[in-house]
Amino acid sequence: MSFLGFGSQPQISSEQKIAAAEAELDMITTMFNQLLDSCYRKCFDKNITDENLSQNESLCIDRCVTKYFEANVKVSESMQSVGNSGALARK
Image 1 (cartoon, helix red, strand yellow):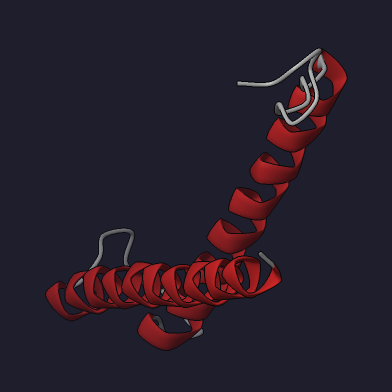
Image 2: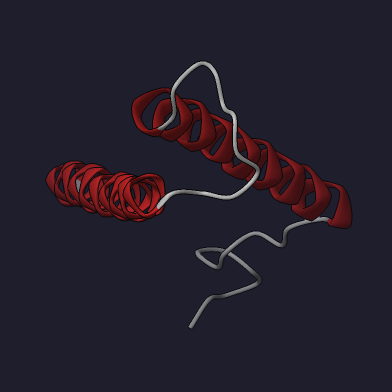
């Protein structure tokens, strides 16, 4: 229990919440664009002639997106683990 607010978590202002949401949206948009670019280059020929995906293209896209998200989760978990161990070392 804090005494006169000492030791308690500081309140986050609306402006800080909006800035954090905007930063998160930018990060998600960047990740999506990187995923789109990477999987597009990997799964499609330069000359697309059909408006529908072939079975091979569809499977490639599915696998590429799955691998991209799995890798993203592993990197995030690893970074969180490193961050947590650093926070513990400071205590």
